Image (cartoon, rainbow, N blue to C red; front, top):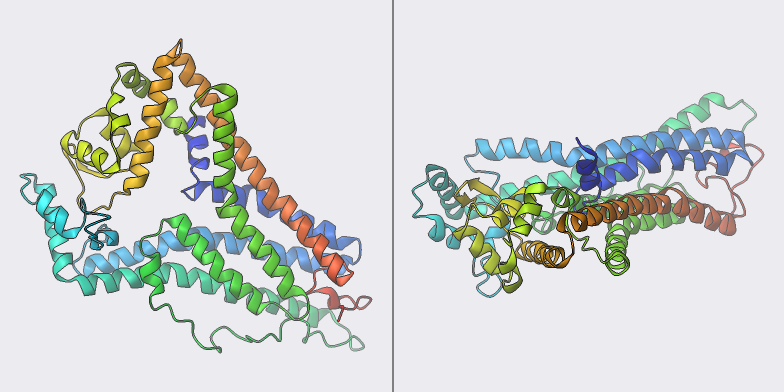
Length: 432
């Protein structure tokens, strides 16, 4: 993979790659190091326990967080296929609102693509007809798929993993203690939830229908919200629930909201300072064929079209440069060289923004003294913005958030030690 492709991947805040880089590559080792430094001054024993807990927690959580959704969905797709339905069909196509989506939907797409002579398109339409005629069954399968993709990692990360970590610490403490030492079994979590599953089960009725149309990062955000609640509920007694609640709230904001806000700020500032349009993906800015298409004025019409009209243009011009780039960046899904896939819902707003960004870049580039230099400058600025965004958001997550958490902990408890482990040291006593 080229450097530009890597930068493009980590710069896409609608994908998992920025989360992967921040979580595994930057945050985890730094947070583990900060945890050790925070505790070692007051108690080497607590520091040892805290580092072990943090290391196990961070990396097992990352593995479940990043890996469970694609695995569960892949297994679910096999099950749905065996039931005779195509799992590629977008559930959003069922929402055929005559005001909001009069140009796509199950019935609309069946009629629009039904007369195609392409075998591939005919097969896709047949998939739509089967789903339409068995709507309740298909919706039930899709709901179960997304419920499993969210509920399984939520249960693992929010309840099971922390309970296992606490149990490990308790077992090690019991082995280490001498007869004259106090009983540590009370330290490690006689919380309201003693074991996962003894409380009333959480109902996901209606929840699956909400998350069924979300992207993978959206589902990861839902998982984070759910497991944040689980972590607070399974926290050990004392100040630890508040400590964890602050950390989880900060992580949710810095993982899912702040990077997009930072991206908008950097793009806006760069456009003003460097007079460069930097909304496009680096892979597109580095694409010589795209620059040639801009030079040939292939995108002048985009400024006059809205999202619906852009979709119609793609259907009427399936081999046009705009269609090619819209397909390349997953704004539409092409089934054949002459037809998009009628089973896949198109996010019209996303397509419209993509078209407007191309039009804006083409307009500014053609007005520049040299189009190639303009494109290279935009590529440099965009790449710098992405790297700065990852660096800044990683710094906020891995350093600023833990430091703030530690400062609040010391202010409220009078101790730097992990609140759930403070009593593991005979010379320390947890605050009331």
